[in-house]
Length: 115
Image (tube, rainbow, N blue to C red; front, top):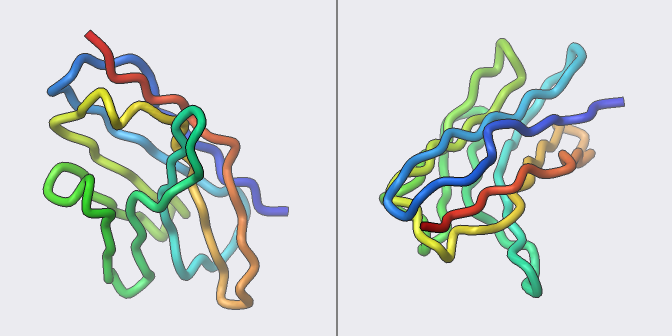
């Protein structure tokens, strides 16, 4: 059973930075990796995604501020978040998908942006 585990969330002031990590245990082959977020009272939304070939896609709201990257040797995906805004406050979830289209979700890490 693959279980991605997120880390790196916390409290940061507006304009600050955080780096999230998500690692999956086991000897697995992950095709797509991504970050989603869910703010209170809102639906979960895509933040950024990256394929094994390095293609990336970002939500318009984070384009130019967030950077997604991956380390396949460690089955880990990262999200570098800069110039954070209050509206970035949410629980951030990691999503991984293998070539058989099986999807694995992490349990989330809370990011709070407040002064």
